[in-house]
Length: 334
Image (cartoon, rainbow, N blue to C red; front, side, top):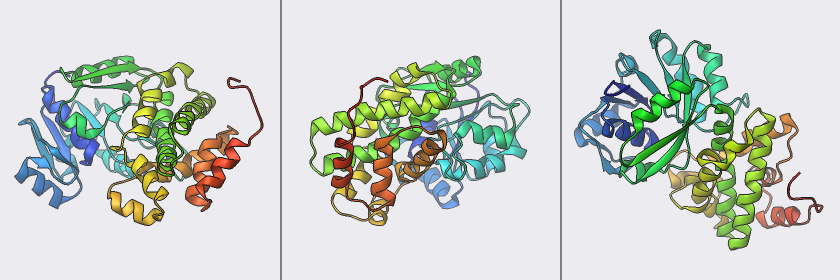
């Protein structure tokens, strides 16, 4: 893929950062947005002031609002939209795909209505004739855009495609590791957003460092249980897309999910907190989706269940914490 064109679909903060990184690594890159006004602004300003104001566009980025033009001749197509928009975009993309198209996504989360992971949605819409991959891991868009050192995971059932993508992103500031466990990488990316909301709530309520690290550690156990039930490899969750992404999102205020939890701890309503953040907070809808998938798979996820009760049952966080702390004693590893 060296020097070949790449299309990045979705010009939010992460899509923009990925486009910058592909261009930085030497690829002519098309960044697509459905908003004509945003495209005009980005063309004029050579940056995405709305979502990633600290990062200027390299010369290799061209901005499009025409989906067909964006993907024509691209050796790889990277979808960077929220989980609720994935199916719609893939459906629009389907008639535009060349026979040799290769598709990846940076989308995190179960589809709300179906409880399906992104790769399952992709196979349902497109069939299994295209190589597919997921890009995930502990990556804040702002830091990638600024060129700060970053590592992530690329997972695909097609090991060669994962390796090609990793090479295409490689630069002195960026390193990608590969995996064939697409289920594990996607589950890690879905559940960590919910736990990050919980971490924000915990810290905002003044529960302290002990509580935070207990939430992260026991939360990781829940991620592993759900992932294994869905067919993932347990060791995946000890890596960048599991533990790494969970710690990053739970402990740094660049995380929208953590900031959402902090805002709720201040007494703000869900609607007010979402409006003030101004971008998609995946952890809010993910709490419902993950809770429903856990019930479907009969997987015990008390922390996720508690966060769901706070967000959707209007239960006080302190009451939920009390319930968690008074659960029956059990072995740490079972």
